[in-house]
Image (cartoon, helix red, strand yellow):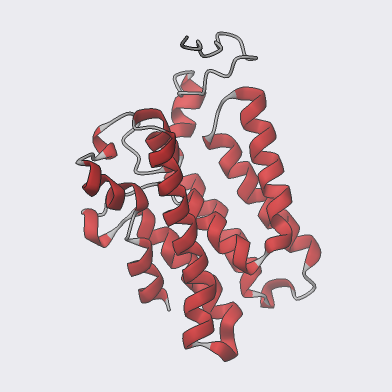
Length: 207
């Protein structure tokens, strides 16, 4: 399951779609092969395709493959597949081990394995991004909301593979976002220029 999840994760949405557009977003913007950089450097429709692929492969690694191959141990296989898909997205075999930061893939895995955590995760992320314009810190905080939800709602403690995933995933996302955190501390991190934030502007409407 770990091997299958890793191979599936290595199909990075931005790089797969980039082949059709003759675009390698690792050479643009922040250099990350993820939806945020795709939105900033290519456009919203391209970014939407990236999200659908990356979330979808997280769901497949956590749900579809375990259901097909390991029906009697779906939770263990799903947690392993989700984590492996995140690793594959960040270090893809098919793209010289230079991928994205695995947030969308983690979201897909969570949607299958623990859908009750999604409102809390999305709430933290959406409110944080709208309030500050920064994506990376609230991606990490959203993953910690997943950890908190699992810890509070489950009664199995360390016996639950879901809890191990809820601990490992934020640690991995913190690692993949380490450069963003460094830039944030240095005051050089990119953020969305939302119109209600200082320095933000409304987009001009063309006649």
